[in-house]
Length: 156
Image (cartoon, rainbow, N blue to C red; front, side, top):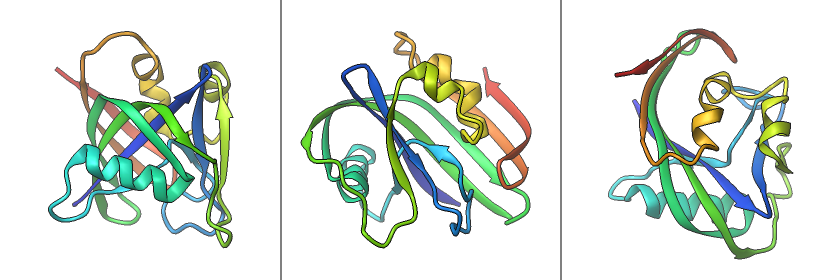
């Protein structure tokens, strides 16, 4: 099991979205929030600050956990425990690695909801992610293959 996070960085009413490149092994061409894996002996917010800086060149503040869940990718037989975080832009210049085939986009919540390649589990959680509640949701998602969601459940 891999532990990771997606972080929606907010700036001027828009959120940063990463469109993964077509050559990615996991979820190619899928749109999601920037993030990545939590390394050994690393805290969740520490990892989030590091990953956002590495992937985007930005610093963030006011981190809030919006959801935590499990996603199982049947076709790859891989399981991820994922934290979904919202944070405010703090500083820096937006950049992406020169050799990356991914793209970074600033979009409104409405524009994000209309993305045809939005990561399926995020589509199920958008109203909560962008909502005003401080409740943290727990969920589980099972993917048949790629971004094809087989089942999704918010745990009670």
